Amino acid sequence: MTKRLALITGGTTGIGASICMALKAGGYDVAANFIADEQQADDFAKETGVSVYQWDVSDFDQCASGVKKVCADFGTNIEVLVNNAGITCDHMLHKMARADWDAVMSVDLGACFNMSRAVIGEMRDKEFGRIISISSINAQLGQIGQANYSAAKAGVIGFTKSLARESATKNITVNAVAPGYTDTAMVQTMPEEVLKAMISQVPMGRLARPDEIARAVAFLTADESGFITGQTLSINGGHYM
Image (cartoon, rainbow, N blue to C red; front, side, top):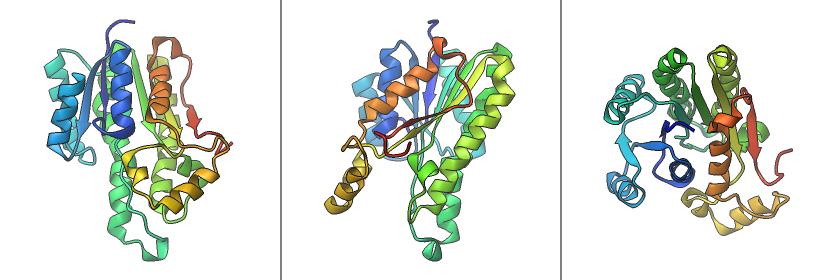
């Protein structure tokens, strides 16, 4: 593989951090975007050697300028984009504020447009690219209290298929990964009884590890995966089949 530059949004914690480390181990130059907790991001950069950049992925202009900054610093264009950043604002629909809907749509779906739009032109010019967006089992299964999140993550799948069709003749693959419930700090804050009930629904009887999700992303970024596009790779221990 020619050394390539990969950018991962929400890349300093959880699944995003594991993706960064997997791609770095695979020989990529890696940049990670983050939005909050500068100290944690700086610590991550020092520990891993991954370059970190702060901007709001829900802001179109910040995404464009952030991508330009990354490209200038590395002296090359981004060839691998992983749209990983996401948030939740969970409420039953009859209690959900419009702000909760808009926030999740802007980050979980809108950022896929913002970031992909910022890199797709150069990918088309170079006739190479890999775009992987993180969806969710709840896009496929639905979840109580997550009408906003499930809708946004389902939108990621539709976005992926459309962009894949647009980009295939330019040797750009566009895929999604739909993780099941994964052992991250956010999941571990759930009440113990809720977590146990959730795990009981998974045939494999456990949570996914972040590195298992990262392995799937690394597989899709590889040059040898060039005939896989428009697909959603589900990694959920058999929870949704």
